[in-house]
Length: 128
Image 1 (spheres, one colour):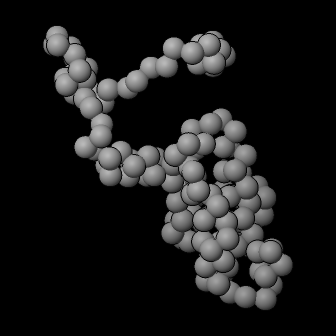
Image 2 (cartoon, one colour):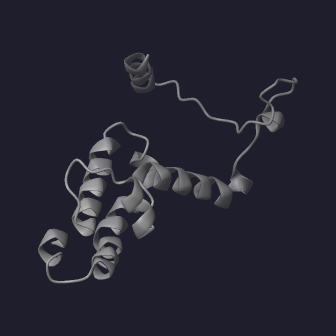
């Protein structure tokens, strides 16, 4: 749709269309799937859409285009969403100093819950 409208409308309208159609889908559930290695495919698609909006070729870097259009790249958007999620739920999050009764160098870190399922063990073995 964006490539079809590129010849008819201005880049400002295409940017608005990007936020209305593409960006809304991109942000949905991003904190859940954004850290997955498969998210690289979505990032490539995001860059492809920006190249269409900016009228650039396939091999052109999108770095300046992200800055010009004032759009966050997917990895930055994932970090932003995660940090905002943590910030908005700080009362539900515990620190290691609240859980552990001994002094460690990691007492100021957020406490993470570890799952002891076979699925997690399989995932850890794949990543190791």
